[in-house]
Amino acid sequence: MNTLIDKYNVPGPRYTSYPTVPFWQSDGFGENAWLSSLTDTFRSTNTATGISLYIHLPYCESLCTFCGCNKRITKNHQVEKPYIQAVLKEWEMYLKYFSEKPQITEIHLGGGTPSFFAPEMLDLLINGIVKQTSISTDYEFSFEGHPNNTSYQHLKTLYDLGFKRVSFGVQDYDPIVQKAIHRIQPFENVKQVTEWSREIGYESISHDLVFGLPFQQISSIQDTISKTIELQPDRLAFYSYAHVPWIKGNGQRGFRDEDLPSAALKRQLYETGRTLFEENGYAEIGMDHFALPNDSMYKAMQNGTLNRNFMGYTTTQTKVLLGLGVSSISDSWTAFSQNVKDIDEYQTMIENDQLPILKGHILTDEDLTIRQQILDIMCQFATSWKDDEFSFEERQVLFEKLAGFKQDGLLTYDENSLQVNPAGRPFIRNICMAFDKRMLQENTERKLFSQTV
Image (cartoon, rainbow, N blue to C red; front, side):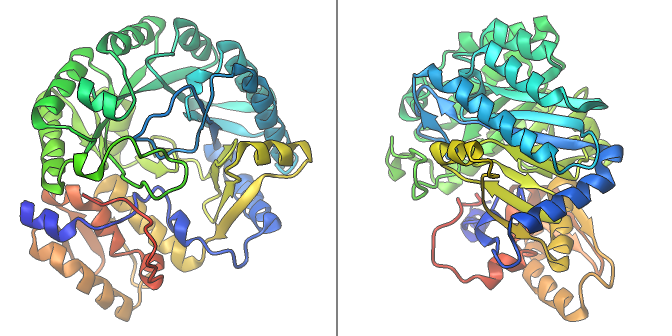
């Protein structure tokens, strides 16, 4: 395994989209082009699958030094209402372009720290969103909760608004690791919010853990997972720590590079976790995710309907994902659009009746073909293609890139299909990179991605 780690531990995307954000091209993209793509997809899919909403709530009271998300650190809660009002106005602006009442299938509140906002502010937000929509019968509303500040009232308010899924950011229970990442979070706090969620009636509770953090050891990850299994969350995200300190504002400065586990130890941490999860009834779902057999994500993996978008893995099949709030990314399947990343700029543009768009990308036919291949690999560990989707020459180039994976026992393929072997799952990002023409065409010297292993 160590030889394979040395061979495949290279920078690479996580593929929540294709093309990935650094390789979006501005040619052909503009507000009109984005709105045209959005409204076309909405018109053709709203009745059948509805739309998803991602709402970015960027505020945090303290900085976690492992975090690469867009956020603003403040203890001033006077910022809550003006920000909520801006998000609601952005939503109103988009409603003007829809040909019919939107059918909402999915809402996800991410951050930042959504539980930074008072329950009454979240009530104002969600009621303002849904009052002009219909809700799908199989809807899924979820939010990210910080165990240190998610109150019973947060959970009850959102549950009463239709939220049935919550994910709690645990990361690690080891006090040395917690100090390094500036996330002091006692087990008792996680236990309390997990028990509250069950008592209130949440159908799916997820805990997010991270491997590869500074000072992590096999013994500490075993202890973290032991405590996690004691609480029996329905889902587990076991994320690889993405070390990207060169990205402005992410705060990854609370420790030294040499404090991080080596690539070989990082892979051992994952394998240790995966073994413990599987021994305790969890099944591996896609990349970095596990679920109990009663969870909807496990069932989606089994029946081939698991999906992946900018929010990560999902059981919904929407083609429109509308991102609201600062830095949020939207997806109309044939186009992507990202909002401006500065909160003040975002609110100013909204006040001036401007959609707060920073950049985007219109997908070509080739992009769409490759996007589907990567999506299938990420969700089903397999993909297939028709003869006319790749030319003979393109297939030969692809097979040359895949040959090393096949030789190493990580996958099998033939003229029209590919299957990732269990041994290849730790290298799923590398396998997807073989299909990624955008990245191969851009011989950039910039640091863009975290290591794949």
